Image (cartoon, rainbow, N blue to C red; front, side, top):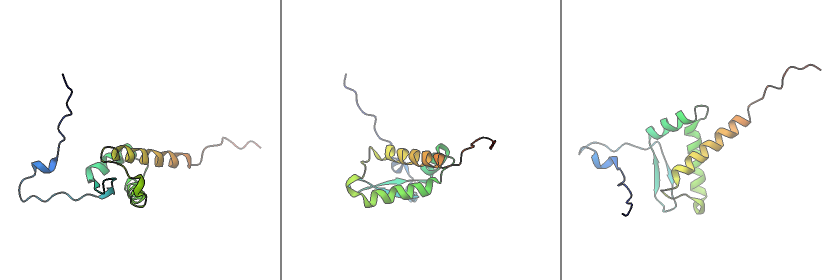
Length: 107
């Protein structure tokens, strides 16, 4: 029995006629010269995953990196992983740059 991929869900297909398409918060350029649309719901989800990070600013930096590094842009399939890796790395850098408690100064 062959395994088939489930059909992708496209919310735009279920919009009522005359209803405006939601605007993305920002877009990330892709390898095929298309764009990945980051919607407000995506931004909220990322902000919950990375509460100590300015997620919107990081996503703008990610989008700009992809704009200027056209040879290293991601595919539609890989862009979500790219975003999560970008945000995770930014969160790690932010955590590593915080001052650490060095203990009492006994000297």
